[in-house]
Image 1 (cartoon, one colour):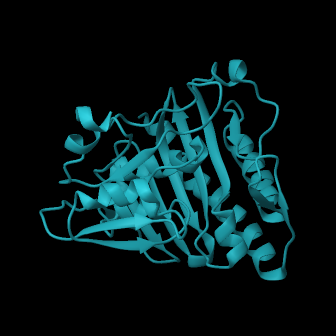
Image 2 (image 1 turned 45 degrees about the horizontal axis):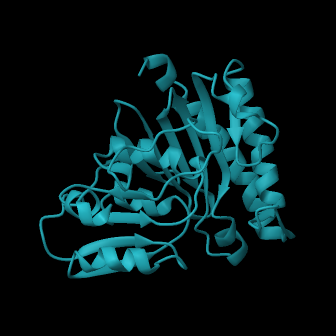
Length: 270
């Protein structure tokens, strides 16, 4: 990754922080929830954060397109011509925002080709930041403390720690967990699940359900720079902006040491 692109990390963090400030103002003052055409919830905070981020990133890098969850009217033919672009979820974990758990994040990724090369996951209600750029490691910062380098842990037997959403530990995950024997499930929202793998608090997060590319891109850069991986169930890294839609396949976020290949890549798993 060029040093010039890595220099975008600090100002992009500032954009995320301003979006988080807008989100928290609405979080603390009350808000209305409406349903989008796909029946997922959206609030004033989603839209306000999207505006802040789109304007901030456009000012930071006028030549780079910005694609957010709230973007409309960008055709696949147009976006697939982009070599580099920002991919953003302005409020990941809208349901956590609605439920007042504090476990929601601002996700900002810079995509080069079809892979994320810079990632920011900011949880404003928790004062918690995770960020990375390719080739420079992954970091965690709490409020105004100094950032600390993070890395995945290597599982060496014993209990497997599994990150899971509050309502999405379904039957496919249960089948996977049977392969591990002893395990512990920790539940939390948004991209924080992937970040817990990145900092070694969890060994794996498996998602067998619908997600979009803006849900994973920022966290993927962080996890990979921390020594882990985000892959499909064939254990191939997730790629971005290749298809007509922006939907992810089922995916796995993992640290080191777990033997996932025998389970997912055997004839019986196909």
